[in-house]
Amino acid sequence: QSTLAERVLKHAGADLDWAVLRRTGLGLWLTDNAAVKNTLEALPRSIIKRQGQEIKAESVALWYALLGRRTLLGALYKKENNMRAAELLANDLSEEPWRTKAQKNAFELLRQRRFELACAFFLLSGTVRSAVDVCVRYLDDW
Image (cartoon, rainbow, N blue to C red; front, side):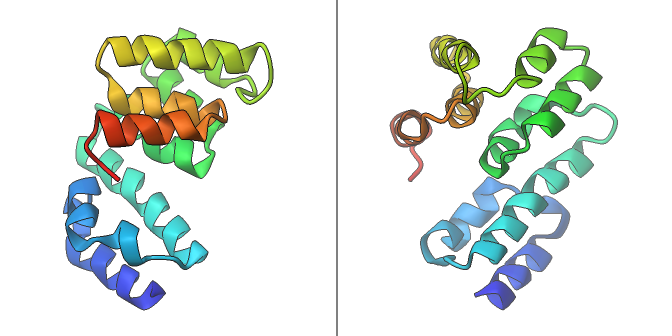
């Protein structure tokens, strides 16, 4: 599986994004944990490379949340001068009162129709079920 996943990544090259991975059905057949982690690490790197100097943390938030890279995501928000998000991400969002704040932010993001970022905040707060619900209900993804 890891060899096949590597070939998918190599074939996609600089155009790697979730749409490419979804077309390959990677999420359905890739079960090797190391290969999944490798793929999840390659995805935000590719997105950031395409963005050049104008890095938008929101575009990679979901992927870094899946990887548990909260501090890296906070650094990206700090680079964008979004100090409120950076300060929130500097805390452990799986513990109270930060979990509640992260969940409130996620619900506000849902209201704003920023579904990927809402999903990321649900993941960071440890409410995986809500994150999956957002993916299925609003992103039409499984």
